[in-house]
Image (cartoon, rainbow, N blue to C red):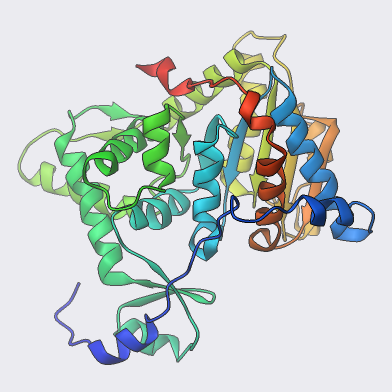
Length: 350
């Protein structure tokens, strides 16, 4: 941060209303989903997607991966994802670094996201050290605290190679000891042995802290830790091989979506010809299918690559923050999660 003088009064005005995360335990969406199943268009797609997710939960052999890209955590779904983990409704997470670090870990440190009820010129926001995500604000000064905390964690570790899962576990341990929010996905994942993978981890606030860690250590002539992206892929593939039957609940697309889908192909290359394609798959996205990108590619298209079975898949073209609370609340209140065995895949790497 520079020595620029910040208008604290104006900044406080803009950061006056916090984002309140939806609590899926407080409302029962089953009647809404049932009604939407009798409708058409996206309503019926969402109802079918919800049924498929409930089937994942009911299938005692199915391990479920939550896949997150985009900014729904900042926009109000953060506690929703944490509840899915706490209630044993997911067994692993693959996400962008921003979802895990800039949003969840950030709030775990006691910071907040804010509603942008007024949006001045973005250059004004820059002068106030306010970062904007569409209609949501983040205090850049607080985000830099997050950066430095990541650096502190890196400094505390043995200088060797870590997968993103291993490093995020250390982040969860830090929050368990020093955090200020109980309902943190990173913290709960550590406590419940649920692995979190971020295949593009440094493309987030973590990157700044990790770069500083390496630069400072290099200046001191000391060894430093590194992230091992290959270990990420190997570990996630090991989980897929052990899991057998799997289901994907995907919000957005991008790298996390492709990474988890590619575990099927990787397992085959490693000689596991009997590995199953992902049996169940739901994706919620607003991406346009016409650009040929991974984010927008349909789940049927993924079948051509040998990644996803098409019998139980559903695309939902909607802004995830508007439909995930309904899907998750329906599944929570139907209660199939109460009969699921815990996988605790994180223990595979102890």
